[in-house]
Length: 175
Image (tube, rainbow, N blue to C red; front, side, top):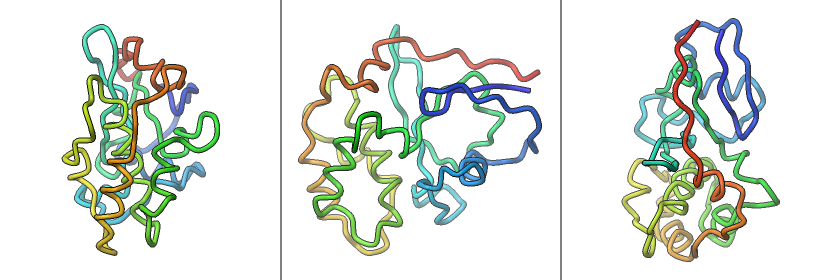
């Protein structure tokens, strides 16, 4: 048995195949924003945000949910594309809706990766390398780039920005 935080709420897992991926578990539990594109960690459609330690505070890291095994989340905190909507659409989602998305299959993964960069401390502009793990099969990179570069700084009252001012959880051992 183990627990982790998902989109700010504690989730208790009692019985699960230890080979279950985060992506598979999320989709089985109704969080279908993350997609399976390649199942090899190369397309980024399955991206989720993992809260990682950053000194005395935290940072978001975009990780491939198709490669991450669910039990590895014990004691961790993860955010999905659905969890970004704390008070309506997230600014990254809004930017993508204004022309950055084409067919939409890759969009959740791009949104998650953009969010990790959006919240990066001391960000000046937008580092497009943050999107290097995401593929768009519609060749819509210019509109995605434009959406990313249109993003300003997070509002200090943004709940996710505030979460980053606190330490990340320490991973818990599995029972």
